Image (cartoon, rainbow, N blue to C red):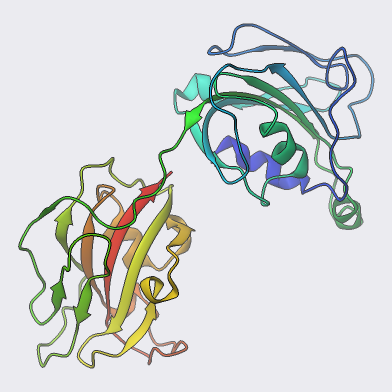
Length: 302
């Protein structure tokens, strides 16, 4: 599980977060150099009940802005006033994480991130001090206060506008994909008398040169979806004019299996049997037991 998900349990603050008073965020001390696992010293007594942040090192690189996807090394602690145990560190796993700076982050992190630059270090204390959390705690135990030490490594490159790479000439029998080139949407045609396979079929139309998609990543894609045999379109991000973004682990099995391992920048066409799609359940615009066909441009993965 990405370490930043530990923050989700603390919710977002109801009121704007404020920087901690001078001398440390709620008395927490951080030592060590940016670029290595920090040493954190906790004050005696009860954990902080108010969320706060402190810039430990401002950094000298680019400014972090709302909407950025920043690459970070982070170390997470449970501040329970007893062991204050470390929950995990990307310095141990050697796997930096990419965090979108958006409204889904707790407010204290949203604000704190914009006060550091690339190469900087941020300390954030996330306590159970939001109204929403207090209401939840009537039925669930309180989460321990969490402490994050976050080193900003850099930023992820912006997502591509469309697939880019070499055309392979691959195709699925009965399905046509036309590539207009540039940043234009491909044309998918699924009107055919061919019988669909009862297994997942994935063909690479354009082979990208980016890193291969991992099952745990969040993807940015453009896609068009149609029903096999009828050419009936049920969805298209191209027509909405906005790529889709989602964790790969949260979509239908056909997408999970079909897109894992695909290099970023690729365009693939997938024929997904009902068992890996929506099965016997009809969806809006999708009849039960439909074989789904998607053409998908993988624009980014983080």
